[in-house]
Amino acid sequence: MESRNVSQTDILAQLRNASNSALKCMQCGICSGSCPSGRHTSLNIRKIVKRAAKTTDILSDKQLWMCTTCYNCQERCPRGIEIVDILLDIRAISANHGKILPEHRKVCEMLLEYGHAVPIDDENRMKRMAIGLEEVPETVHKYEQDLEEVKKLLESCGFDELILLTKTADLDDEL
Image 1 (cartoon, rainbow, N blue to C red):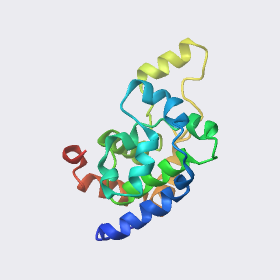
Image 2 (cartoon, rainbow, N blue to C red):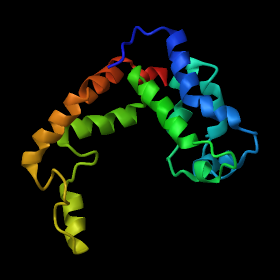
Image 3 (cartoon, rainbow, N blue to C red):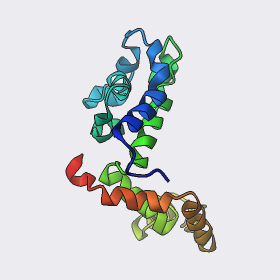
Image 4 (cartoon, helix red, strand yellow):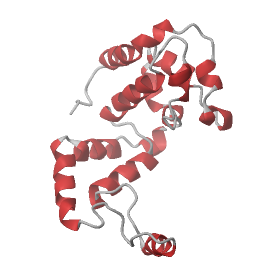
């Protein structure tokens, strides 16, 4: 687990390292032009990746979390820049420093509590049965004894501590 006492210089070095391959960018704009999220939001994937090499402010930018990771940009990049992979690295750095959107934190908390990011409720059970599916999907919802194993796995890699860290970062106000 990374310490929250890491200097801004160290964080910037992490961001520069993550976005280093973006230096090959020739500014053609294919990544931004092929982004389905960018058509409906202010997301500009190219700007995010470029900003990451210059400032730690990117860690508090909501746009960092707007990418759906469809890989359109990465598949179409004529320079073969792994744009989505860079973005995921930047998100990891952000999360390791306690900064994720409250909505993402909620999904993580559900994963810690239920072993599943979207707990099945009575309404979804009924919908599943109505379309001919089993009432409960092949998840820890069906095999409840496995929930403890999922929790142990998440704890063993520090996921629970990371989510606690993001809770203390007060991102509701910051982001």
